[in-house]
Amino acid sequence: MAPVVEELFYRGLLLKALEKRRMPVWAAVLVSSILFAGMHMQTLQFPGLLLVGLVAGTLAAITGRLGPSIWLHIGFNMTTVVALFMEMRS
Image (cartoon, rainbow, N blue to C red; front, side, top):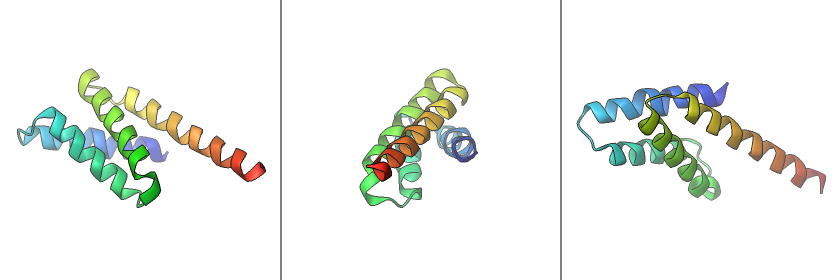
């Protein structure tokens, strides 16, 4: 659920709002990605979250659809959960 809601907000609403204010697409993707990464308030994870935001924003900008960025976000979250689970077991 969180990936869908976050993608609707950061790529669906925020990215489009920044583009409508005549911000270049690359800058809108960057700003929305920085805000996405910062919202999680995970200092050590900021670079990885920023990268996910940049890729998701680029996918949304290129395709004009949110589906690809939602699936990317779901995959990232699932990978994180599996990694944490494996870490706890070792």
